[in-house]
Image 1 (cartoon, helix red, strand yellow):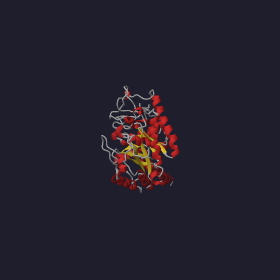
Image 2 (cartoon, helix red, strand yellow):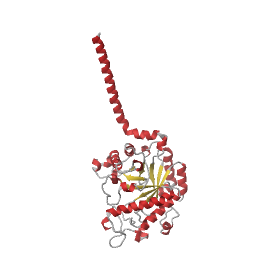
Image 3 (spheres, rainbow, N blue to C red):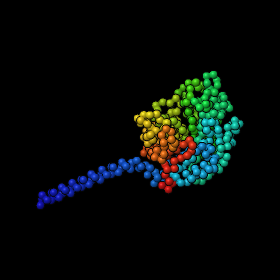
Image 4 (cartoon, rainbow, N blue to C red):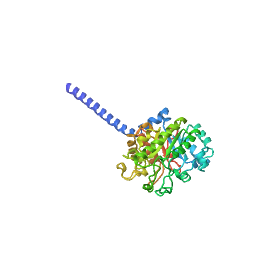
Length: 370
């Protein structure tokens, strides 16, 4: 009897151990599978949290002003997880799409691409869409030529241009600061929730060695100029009650220097509410982050970039631009969604999608009711 009792107890114990081992392995395996989607599920099931996150798309002024394209855009906002519109208010050609700014109208920089802009903003807000005004700051092919004293020069005093023949404004010039900030203030006055500064940097393309500025140029002075502009923006726009964000190069999340353009992500982020690194996989050289072809590995590329950014800037301020276009490699819903998932797996719930033609992959977006 004792032997049988021992065998029975031993068998029972072994069975229990086997069950616990199997259950533990199953749980660990299941957790590994769930890990990829855990943060996304958390944000999507908690409606109060979901409302805090920015999921947006870039819209050019011409797309925003077109009734046909506006209808398509509104359908996306009505049916998907998108809740933010980034609308161009000033582009690198120097065109400005807001009325009521004396300096803009005097220099004939205003273009009526969105004649009913204020009405459109109200419509978006009624749909609970967060509205951001994108302003290209120092790359400006209009005012640089209208006001040559504000432009970056060549050694012979002529206006310097980049590879595409576009002139740039001098980031050291306080008149240039004031001009762009008046546009930002006007955007705040007509109802935008946030001002997003793009091309908040020094030139990178073309023969930059020939660039001459209104004061002695150096890496340190370049960084000071950009920080100085942002401090002035913060001072003036805080009175308007709007948020401020900046677009920066994707590599600023991991670069050890200012990349020759004055951008140091940590120092710049201190002056603003949000920073938007442009982490488009197609823009990374082969073997960046140890990835043989970053363009073909959107998840790994975005994950590595965000991982680096989180070592430098607060999680709550990070809101990356993601790629929804094809450049050298075909991008579809899987590639776009992989980038979004890389954000979630780094506990970043906000993102923006960029497509130069403003046509977005519907299949990459979750339905609003999800």
